[in-house]
Length: 391
Image (tube, rainbow, N blue to C red; front, side, top):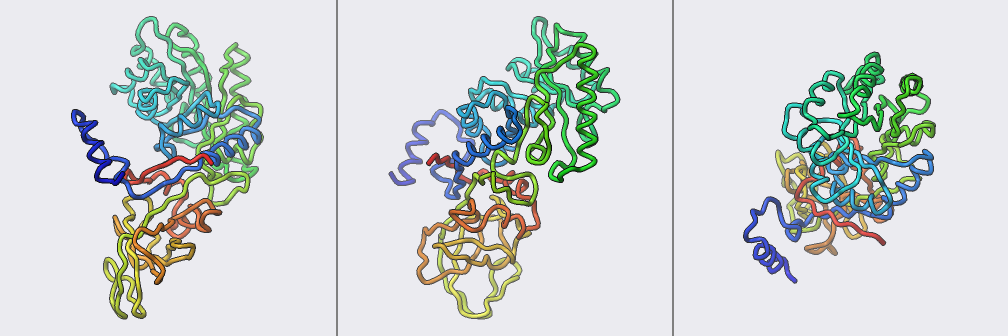
């Protein structure tokens, strides 16, 4: 079925609905997600930490698709899912996910907090001053599953460590409103092995756990380990690990970990081939001048999608198995690359792959743009069509 016919069927089927996004059939940039890579990473991180996992699916699952990734992970036996914002948790619940979902950023004065309570979502308390406000919002007869988010040194959102014991006591004193199901914190630099900063954070977190046990408070879900800590520290005495980027194959820093498999491949395609004369400028501001008469290909992808503009002049893509330089400044919607005589309209152009289907990975793309791999993935644009393979 051709694209025009598919789109007509889409409109006919949804004629009473307002179309709020580009139909999948009209998204020509492809992000291919390898489900087997996800499965490998989940199994490895479980084995490495000796713990159950709470995969973090914030920022649209690091660009991999929140709702679909949640479905995949539930099928892999994941009981707990973490997201950053309560809005993400609400979206996931309304998509049909009935499992445990924890979020730790929200507006206490917004409607979302009331919606989150109604939807039986786990909530983290990240500020001790929120406790009385949250208590007033909880309807009579409702008990909210609560995780206490403790700041052990990163100095972002989190209950200050010196106030954490009292905060636990305050919440525990209201069992008709709160059920303390967890305690969590976040690490400063877990990508560094044996960091004195991280070691001190772990010491404080364990110390708090011991003080809580002494007064009869024992949260069943205790977690501090992001991907870096899963790989570099012994966290087996906790009850959960909370990896984010590692689920998708990225260890949380700029280094490759051979045990993790990259899940995402991004492809564009050739929409035009043309000859450019020697001395002609290419792209905005003519940052590239053709050194000879040359053939070029136009690809409909740019910095609005996933490619950092800062990689202009340094980026390559792969077409028909060969490396091609991206010429000139990267535009919002297009890049221009070197072409060969064998190239044809609609030929695939791989922007980055998993290291096997293409030598260039997200790490190479990030290096070319002086960017962080996770940062790039989180900027996966809405014009990109994600497909999930399980081979």
